[in-house]
Image (cartoon, rainbow, N blue to C red; front, top):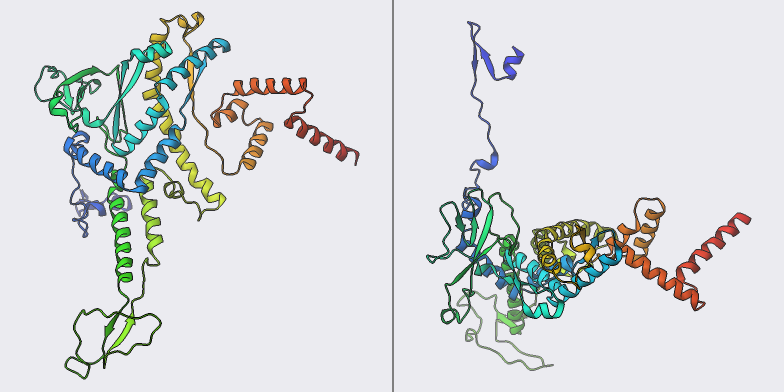
Length: 483
């Protein structure tokens, strides 16, 4: 009987078991006064929820805030600078260091000439502000004359990619154009329709607005954050924070307006006498000019009180702190980075908050490497192998691996970090390659440079600082042994 009760069953007198209806509910699915809060909740698909008009509205509002809100502009720029920095450095893994160095130097010349680091920073800012950005791999003769490889990267704003109306580049029966992204029946992007002129260009009507190019996905790189299955376009990463930016601006203006109003009046006259009482009659809102350093007499029954400037209120700083903290959370950014202020942090809390931020940057760098840098490198190599003075002959037909060395994050306390690195190396918990990689440096180049410095120092009769410290430590060990 106990088992039947646990299963929600009851036994009749005849011995038969009858199932009992069990109603399981979620509080969030019930009313409970939250109907107005969730009034805009819907069951639309990812592409339907991110309707072109919705995305356009979000883009315009996000751009407005970044252009007019100092905190929004600083957050977006800091995010791009911390993610990309001075740009990743290519490291070839081919087994031939000399040949690899030649390829790495050729890539560095090309990426510097086309300003690839700057374009990556622009792409990161565009994804945070606009939700997405497109990069088209093109051929630029000017780049080819300077570097030998004519490959170039052209950035396209999200506004310029949309589905054309009519024309001769409509998708076939087994394809579908989702606001500029042409997908096959399996949902794979195969092409993009890009307008030749930006819809917001002032001279668009005179320079061919409405003409499109259909480019294969092999030459178009789409950089956006896919958060839902079946999503083909992106929305600004600042979307959850847009109302908060508006609240921050309104509150700041309200506090400023209240302070200015209080400062505009020297005082007010008031009386405790009832209406029709003994107080002398004065004109309402009549200003009184006061003389400095003088005793004044007031009309009978009236008193004067000076206005007290109570703005900004004591909660002004706390309000801005909480709003900025909530704004930065959607970007996995700590408050002190978003605000540019670490006055309320100690060493431990600052390091702890930065761990989540650096993990998010590491994930984003991996996405940039796989979706943007790797395709660009493949296109660059396919052209470079045809040239005699770019890639050495022994690497033209031999497959080689590669990795991207990103700039390291500076440590808050370099002494503690150096001590920790020494302990890890002595304990065998890390390698020189890993330690140098955390700083965005190539361990082979660093060791070769170190060897050249030590060789030159010995030739000049100088003593390297590291060697002097090591000798001093050895002398201390000897003294301890003698003692």
